[in-house]
Image 1: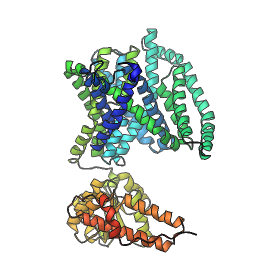
Image 2: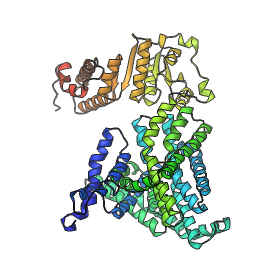
Image 3: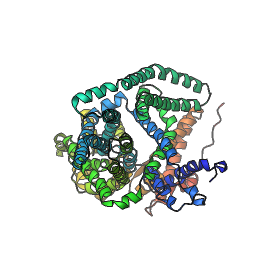
Image 4: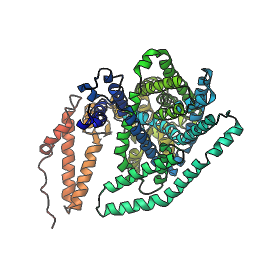
Length: 619
């Protein structure tokens, strides 16, 4: 294919097609887009459509041929990922999660790395190669695990917080691991035996790299804030948002090239730049500016990983590859489960955390590729380990579903202090409002009830929320409100009303069903995700459903009208009238149980809510 006719852009066109077609399709199916990129890499690579493509045939335009170019862009993608991770590693965040991050997380990295290295040493690998394999495979995939948990609504649960803490610890550990690989490389090149004395001398050879890293930190503290202040002033004067995007890209590339110049990886330099920018007031703006580039370049990285999945190699020795993948997941899951239980996590949370963190992660390919290039690891076994790591990443969504299935049979356990809490029988005889979910929304509802002299009892399945609420003097208890016996134990029989404030639509539905079965006449108000969820809740029998999207729109409209000078009385009347109209639409859509798409019914909501008020022109 002649480059003069655009052949040099073929791989770019194929990648953009994958990003624009394959990934949205996976999103529609509620599957992680990372898995979409991985699947696209397998499909578009030499073991997919490439098997049937002729050099001058049309099918060649549907395959990626220049893998070297993809690898170069992949390196940028990893650098952007580490830069974004660095932006999240502020001191305040690490301090708030220090027990899980520096306790459970760091111990998981160390124990899993040692255990995996011991297994590979038993398989005949030298110490250096086993260490590289252990450190690489001990890490999990932030880019796959967190979207999967988000799709299940588990990010804010005990499982979500513990998983994120471990992943954060793994992200922090990437830099020491990369330095350790550099040390092992220095020892291997000098022909030294890895002994404590030699290790000290190898560390001394890293002095130029350490000096370069210190210089990067110093320059970053001196230069970054003034540079972004200048860019912010220019943007404020209307000179273009692209200046901020350009400055962010410049920081990532220069930091990465600077790290490479002193003998470190580009990824490590980007991580340092992100950590430095996290301390500035421009952190959030940088995140927004850089996010589209990070997503696309990470897509290149995962497509490269998918291309690297050699199906012929898997078919040639499926027992070894599949055995490595299954053994890796089982070994890591067992270790993480035991550590999570030792750190006080509930049984179901420990199971979920262990299973989603069992597979390998994206940094396994970075670390194992480095070890392979430097000759630290045996090529044949390392390639099989990388194949196993790829297959294990594909298993993350399936493992998340398996975890939810298994935990349904596990009785939730919490620490003795929370477990011992139970509502007082005498207190339950008094009529009160029962709030299910005592996060930010539930707490605000409770505070307003208390302000108006209304007694309430709160129920939450998160021990941390229970402990925080009780520390402030609120009557909060631990338990799963989807269980009828728990609702009954919290006084549903005498409750004046039930308010469900949880952010998971599935859990809200479960609580509404259980409560309605016990008290058909009870006032039941539930938080809804959107209009379709509100219609479904009305079908389940709620008194009122409050959809977040609709209420946010009404609040924006109210503030806008008031700021434009429309009299407050007219605005409030209009807002209440429109809210009643939406309620009628939701209720009308409810009887069939599916909702007949309330979003379409919004077009007729005006007639249901009566005539619209005539706008008042401000003078």
